[in-house]
Image 1 (cartoon, rainbow over the protein chains, first blue to last red):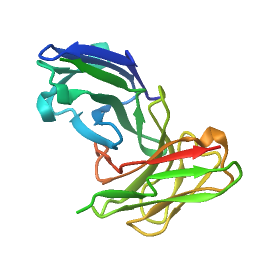
Image 2 (cartoon, chains in turn green, yellow):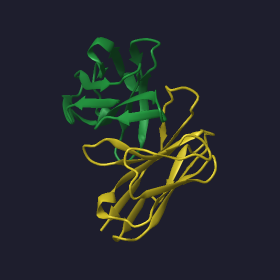
Image 3 (cartoon, rainbow over the protein chains, first blue to last red):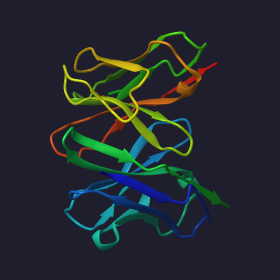
Image 4 (cartoon, helix red, strand yellow):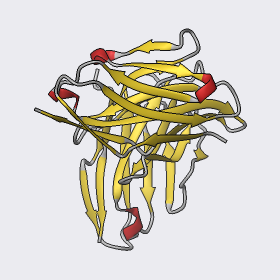
Length: 115
Length: 114
């Protein structure tokens, strides 16, 4: 069965510092992995997705994530945090099971950016 | 192009009351979903509709019913609201052409049941 674990419900960084949000997954078949971002009082929007074309995936707003099969990880990074990055980030895994396509979301990591 | 729209944005119900949350998308997507979001639990799938005319249970379907009215609209009904259903509800839609589909989310409905 699929599952997603996001390490750290809250992460705080200073403006200009590296952002690292951790995600580990389990899936019985090759997974498709996503990072979504949720700004306050809004729905989720896609940051980036891994679909097996390349292990390093670049997304919007300077974010990128690397798929590491041996570690079952898909961590999200950004070299330099900006105040506007403050939001909640969700990792998700999707695969095709007996019931069709299913997506499972992690519990989320809230990113705080200090001036 | 409005994307995914949800009504209402906010709702307060008393225990035992019923209500329907409305969702519509204008992207001609085949699949639609209802999630609830609770603190520390991420998003949990309530029901989904892979295509017009079909609906299936997700992870937490108890206490809810859905209707896929047409390709654009997917409603969620609470027949007898309970305080445990206090949550933020999100509707989403996607294409179903490949397993690496992404979902497009509405702005959410904040529901409080007293």
